[in-house]
Length: 334
Image 1 (spheres, rainbow, N blue to C red):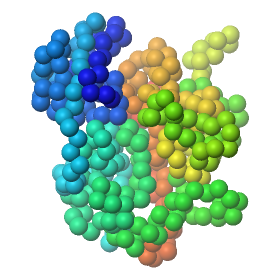
Image 2 (image 1 turned 45 degrees about the vertical axis):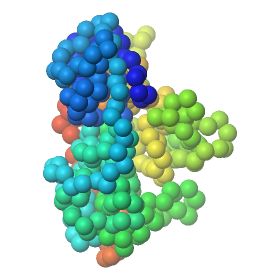
Image 3 (image 1 turned 60 degrees about the horizontal axis):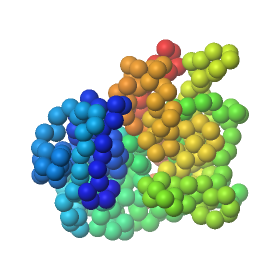
């Protein structure tokens, strides 16, 4: 977002609350962040500050956003509920809720997982990740739900970080680390299971996105996939497929599953960056559950690693959020 950006309400986006409209237009910022900016007078309509978060925007209206200057503050503890799956003196395993940003970044200075961890763990978190990322060994995108392991001390952080290094060589396949996701995708992969390998780099025109390199430049990435089920909403002449797919990572690059799915021809449903066309199309077939589903349908459901102190293999599975399960049921069962 650039200060002074003007967003015009279209026929498709009209009728939403102002805070939701802006959060959809700028997915890198939370809805609560826009609520705060609206209350502070940072959003203007026709040149005047507009303070009503619940106002239903109308087609043709224009809104300008002038965020307050960024403050490079040290994260503070905040009482944010965590779904704790396991905890001991070294590690904490959580089921991250969708919509929760992992660590402070531009547009998200508070109300992040780090703020919640500071409240839950106090000063015991590992400091290796820096003052803004205490305890953070790996990340999930804001709107991706699921399992994460947190390091509660530097010893744990060092050992876990080595396990999260990319699996690239054949000899790496003996590692115990396992990260499995489930997702709903638009289309049906040509093979029931397979491997997607590409080199990824930051998109040259849209810095929020990643792009697939046509040469061996960028960062190598590998994703395994397996189709669990597919439903065809269309006809024999015009098939319209939605599939439930499991993904397993050998590398953990930014947006890896999301861009690999798009690149392979089956983008994640609801993905605002890599699957917008599929999002609009599914509304016709699943208006009840998908009409209120405003994020990518991706969940980190299984995580396995070696405990940094006991050397025990730790395996965890977490159920997907209710909205994901409702969408899955409607897609598969109708």
